[in-house]
Image 1 (cartoon, rainbow, N blue to C red):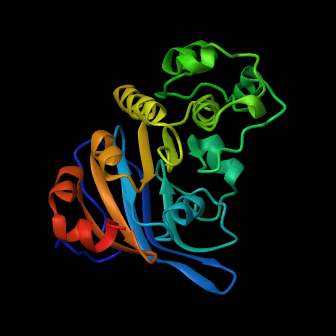
Image 2: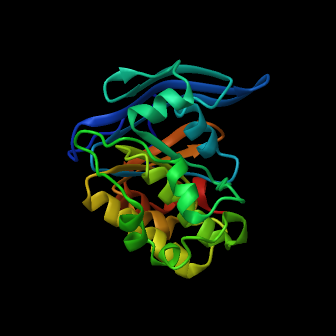
Length: 250
């Protein structure tokens, strides 16, 4: 079993590091949730953050995005220290976040939801438009005037991803995209992630579904009780039965 020091960062030849996290600790009140988490996402890379329910995956993403009231450690994005930055400042730098609970604006149409997420074009980043997103998610293209509150869970998931992409991010934090949606939507999500990767985007993916993660990810970190217990390529993780049994099996 390839267990590691929690602060050790992964290596990849995908490109320069966009996101570097070191010694990340996070708290809910007095409860200590993350313990010296360290990870790295490089340009053009899809990295899976894996673990059972309650392992700390969503908390890690919230802490990186500046959404935790109490967090300690170093978070660097595009070479800038964002450890104390506000979420809106991090978003404006080119990091997008797709939360697990979707949070669409129920009274706004698909197009209006997309407009809420619009940010200016960025150097060396993909520029997204509603039409380009409708090509990516044809279901949304069939309902541009439908209110968000009248969409299925899977359609809302597509809309939340699309709204985030309207910010033209360099890196997307994608929290549990396959959770609670129909298999056909899961397939579309996998295709979407591969399309974004081909466009040169980077993704940090929180996921429990090993098959889904294996389809789209280059590397993986495995969390247990707020500690990084394993890191390696996705192929190494898929082949390591001891790690899967210890940290991923229900």
